[in-house]
Length: 133
Image 1 (cartoon, rainbow, N blue to C red):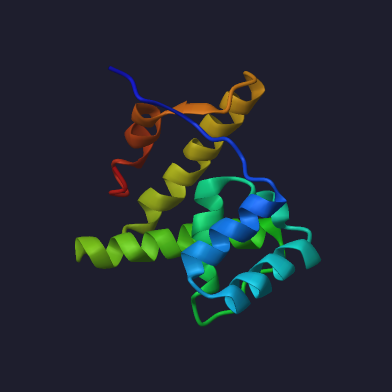
Image 2: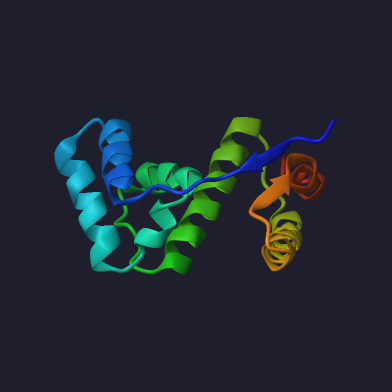
């Protein structure tokens, strides 16, 4: 049985409320939301899973990137680093570099078809070598 996932975006108030609850700190949340709107990267925060990852990034020591691409890149690198530590094995960066374009192509083709749904099995078939599924 295939699993389908649909992501419904947050509005402006949802972004503030979610980040405040996730970070459990109103000042940190206000700083994050201000950064997103000041750098015109708030569209990332409309997607719940991306907002969660942005909140995780904002808890780190480094400053949050000021471009959408920079934020996404930081998310990917943090996820890979976390999986490497969790699996207690060195990450084969060649496999990662081969998988990322395939994931991008899958996402692009899904968008071209007018859908916002990816089958979990499709993503896992690409990511099995990285260890995310």
